[in-house]
Structure formats: C-alpha cells, structure tokens
Length: 253
Length: 335
Image 1 (tube, rainbow over the protein chains, first blue to last red):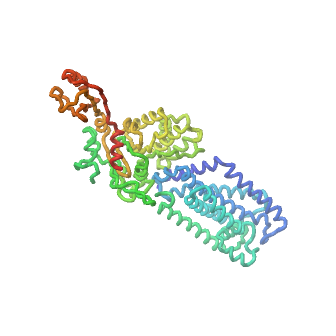
Image 2: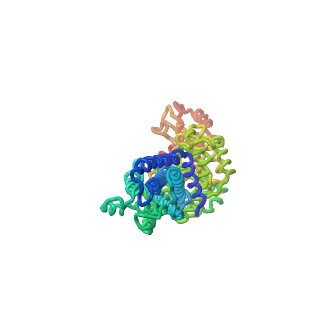
Image 3: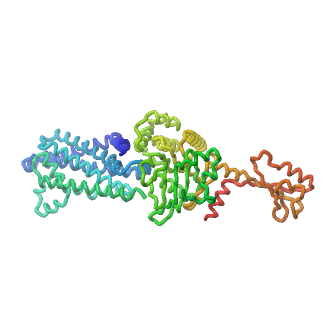
C-alpha cells in the first residue's frame, strides 16, 4: 500500500476543486436554486402535494441526486482524462502505485466533491422549503454510495474517452436522460402503467426512490430493491475498473 | 549471466570497457539489467527487437539513435509505462513486472514532452510527485531540488507563466522529488537553448556526483560527448554498440593526414619508414594516421623528412573520424 500516493492524488484533485470554487460549487447551488424557483414555486403551486408531501419538498431528494450524479461523473471523468490529454499520465503509470490506490485517489476525491455539493444543496433547500429527514443515517449512506458509484462510472468514462467530445457524450446522452426520467421531479406512480414498467429498467429510479425514502419514509420501489440496485451498479463499475487496469485498456500498451 | 551482443569474448561489457578502477565497482550486479527485451505494439510494429543492456551504478549512459529507433520505448518499458512483450528488465535487482513497486520506487523519469498542468503551482507539482512515489513529505528536500534547478524563486508560480526551459526544469524537479537512484532523461535538451543545455549538463554532473545513475537519450552527439561515461547506439529496435566514451573518443581522436604529391610513388621511401604511411590513390598521395591527443603527432618531423627526401607536396588535407561518422556508419550499415 502506498498511502502517500493516494493522499497526493486526492489532494491534487481537491486542489483543482478549490481552485475553481466558483465553477465547482457556486454553479450547482445557483442551478439548484433555479430548479426550486421553476419547479417548486411556479409548477409546485399548481401541483400542491405528492404523496402527502409538498411538491417543493418532494423534489429535494431528486434535485440532490441529479446534481450529485452528474457532478461525481463529471469530476471523476475529467480528473483521469486530463492527465491522459496533457500527457502527465506517464507519471501515474511509472509510479509505484496499483489500481486500487489510483482509484482511491481519483474516485475518492470526485466522490468527496460530489458529496460536498450534495450537502450544500441540501442546506440550500432548507432555505426554500420545510424539510425533515426521516432516516438521516440512511440518507447519508445513500448519498455516499451514489457519489462513489457515479465517480467510478466517471472514471471509466474518463479512461475510455479519446477526446473532449467523448468525455461529454455519455453524461449528455445517457446519464442526464436517465436522471431526468428517473423520478427526480415526479413520483413513478404518476406515470401511465406502461411507462411505470419501462421506468423499472432505469437504475436511477431505484436510487432516487431509496434516497427519497430516507427523507419522507415513502418510496416508489421497495427500499431493499434500491439498496440492491446501487450495490449492483457499484459492483459493475468496480469490476469494469478492475478489468481496465488488468488489461491496460486505453492506458498501458 | 547471459551474453550480450557485445560480449563476443564472453566478457561482460563492463569488463571490456571500464577502466580497472571502476571495474570492481561494476562487478557488483548492474543497477539496470535488460535481457532480450522485445516490444511489439498492437499495430504489429516491433519497437524493440531483443535488446540486452547493462547499466552500471553511478554512470551516465547516453543512448544515441535516430528518431523512431526505440529509445523512448526502451525507457518506457524499464519505467513500467509499457509492458514488455518478452524478455526481462531488472532494476536494482527487482524485476519490473514481478517486483514493480520496488523497481519503480528507484526510478525517476523526465519525459520528452512537456506535460504539466498549466494551472498548478511549481512546488505543488513537485510535492505531488514525491507523494506519488510513496515518500513522506520532506520540505527540505523539495527546497534543495528547487534551488538546485533555479526554480526556488518560481515555486509559487503557475506553470503557464513559465518559459519552456523552466517547464523542463520542473519536469526534472518532479523526477528528482522522490530521491531516485536512477534517473532517465528522455531527450532532455531537445528544443532547449544553449545556456539551459549547459545548465542541464551541470545538473546531470552534480547528480552523478551524488551517486545517481543517469540514462539519457539524445540525438545530439555533442551531448553524449559532453557528459556521458558510456555511449550506446540504438537503431531500429536494436542496440548496435555500447562503448566507453573514452574508447570511442580514442577512436574519434584518430586523424588522417593526406599529403598530395607532385610525383607519384610506387612505395613508401625508406627515409619515411619511421612513420607508418600508406600510399594513397594512384600513388599520388601519402596517408598518415595519427592521434591528435598524443604528445607528439609526428607531423612536423614527417614534413621535414619529406622535404629532406626531396618529395614535393602539392596539397595537405586532414580528416577526423567523429562519433557522428561512427554513428552514421553504424546506423547506415544496419539500415
């Protein structure tokens, strides 16, 4: 184990985060506030209650998830893509570190950043809506697991991407639609039966549902299914990362 | 120990090329030992075709070769950036594939391309490298390196504000941050001005004095001449020669004096037998091989003797065999 290397990577990545504090922190907060204004105030005033919860409060877990997923993915993918892009990857490849340490450093930092942003959005939400958290421990656990899994996914995307366009491609074409269609702003039960069935194939539904359960005690899908889904997703990403380092895919010839 | 292409007599290159005093040191296992190393890329291109090479502790080895000869691939494989297709590499006794962690800890690498994050600060990047190689923070060591490379004043400057030469120094500082025993410099002075080049040579010499083994690749022959202890020539994925620089210089020190004659000669006159002369083309010239670094080259006495013998000269011409000639000759021969 090379703890100094993990710390070095982690610190460098966090340094990038604080260097671009406007971009990395303020912009998610502003966009979330806008969601509150648009969905909470404008639309929410017409919807009123969803499952006995005020619409403004109902969308909080979804909003946090939306931001955390995109941020974790973007941060991790950029963190590993950038050294590849500028050529600094040589140092990582020639250093006495194994893939677990590399992943701990990069994915750890990306997950922590996303977690930071998630918590800030949560704090911001209290300014807009009345909010109680029914299961705080489960809430934190879901948040942390989501940060880690999506940071892992981002790491894979960053390794796969050969240029900046590809770096944006999967988040844009896959993650954003899945997140928006994952029940962030509505309950799956509001959909026609066909679309309810289709939604069951969207992994994000399970995450948002589980996360929402930790706030309000109600969920679209059973809480164990949510836990299972996130565990499965994290394992798949881990297996993929392990394979990448094993085969040297796109990083070591 | 397996034979290298150069050990025709069954002697290791160390025995053949190192002076007596350094031989004993070299008898200790080489710090880097490359054996029958092959590297083929997925495209089918074979970058290394069975390279064997021993690098001795504390020496400066210059690897000369044209572009695409395999210099960078060789270094990348020793450093663990690319995986060998076959063959083995040992660094400090550790196999780079099996004991990769121990092997890589000993190595510092300065890449050919400047690849630094523009927004980072100099000292942060150097500290990062130290951590990456598993060393606990040591501000005193970082300070020493930055001062040695004249970067101390720039320690809080962002990379993008630095000149190209400064960036190159940062790369060196990063490579030295974890106190490596072996330093690889891949084309350290490509695109660098004369002053900085001399500075770099000074740094390299200082490092060698502190016991660091240095391997540099270059296609500047004068660079090899200026700082290397041994010179290796690589072309098309094969090592063509590894030789002590002093011996190469001795070969290079040979000069040929060609004396054009007014009257053709059949044989070398008796009076000139003391100088080992050859008759040139058509008997119209005499050729004299001499050592420019000898105390007496024998040129003055030869010319005097020729005048006494009544030979009339029409022209004089000298030609030096340089490392460049040897190099070009070797590479051509191989092509």
